[in-house]
Length: 270
Length: 341
Image (cartoon, rainbow over all chains, first blue to last red; front, top):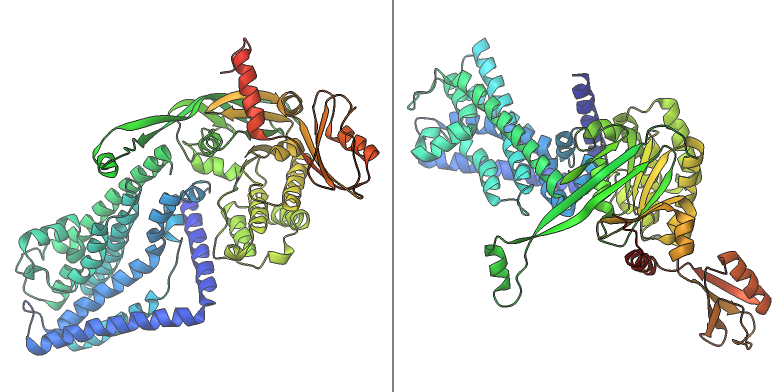
């Protein structure tokens, strides 16, 4: 246990140092930040424009959709910030520089996560939080303990899920030379998906994203309950428990796959 | 200096094979390669056995592709062997990676252990935390490293901006900060100029002498062997060809000593009536190359003799090549009745 805390502290230290080193390039940092914010604003504008034409999307109003969007954006951006280093794993596996991680007395996964730390996502996160607050006042749901718990669940499970999906991309590279684009489609596509109510998608697609990759589930359902929307799929009563459960299961599976991947590297080198 | 006790490194019949997809050549070669499931089995390391005692400085030499790096990776826990067994500081490397990592220092000549985007000083500080180095030990080790390796000029520079020589020195400093019992170095002087090599060899000698750090270094530079290792293990095509005293190896198979001289004044040097075991050749108006066979000469005696025949302006000594040495070793091996496994 103590070792875990220590390793996390070390990872945090590395992350902090990387951020300071990056901050030196102020110009580049600011540009990325601004660029990221502009993209976010454009996405929101697109949603607003849609709602000029159509009064509701599956029974959800503009403000409700914005709340859903904000929630998924917050979880995604936080996850993206945390796991940035994992993008570098395929390159390291290919070049053999992954060896460097294996000679240190620290968890390989943690090291991989802090290989790169980008805080340009901070801009989008702050915007999303702002949007969330604004949409919250417009939709005015009741603020109870249950609501808070649901929000917390959505946030934590969402972050855990996205990080796990990003890890999948790194895991795949242990077996293939190039990382498959499918994983990108799932992680970035998944984020887009979670912004809209689930039931407008076709059955099989929903199956994948509720059961196999509980992305839509973990964020959509808590919001549905909080906003008291009709539940065409009928999962609402079980959702608050199923969401975290599925997330937990998914994370375990990904963890196991990571171990398998590292063992594979052990036995094939680079 | 060597101390008694159980061996620090114990390698027993270590074998490592790799599967490589058979490359098809000729028409549609690429397509056929993709479609076929045939693969070659390459034995990178084949039944290697040796033991290293505390305090030894062992050179693990061989040409490129001989299996040096593969062996090292197995001893560090990066690769799992196909067969065989190894124990380093009492643990099996690939089974207890983290525990072993705490007690060894690793230097890869071709890639850095430091953090690319951070200043060297920050990397060293991170390692202090990572390896839980007590403050007084850290201060002492850092001070020694700074002095012997002359780190101060680039301590604040990001590692990615360092020259190869500077980066190697940084990696060396990083490797000893936590007082490892064993230092494993994979081609530590590769690509460096003579001055840089000297500095690094000096540092390694100091570490071994003052701390008794056991060292295993792979190299294909005979100079490293000459300067650092009492004992060498020669590996060729995955197998151990020689395991013993470095001087004996050099004397037997080191090849002729080759000396190039530049004379102060152009003059005729008579190439007849040369002493036993010497041959010479004029290269240009003022430059000559001489060869001395090791049965009768050493580098020292060779140069001394050369000073008596001309006013020397410049002298360059080449100890013979590794390739030649291994070839000679292999040939004599074949001829002899004993078989090294």
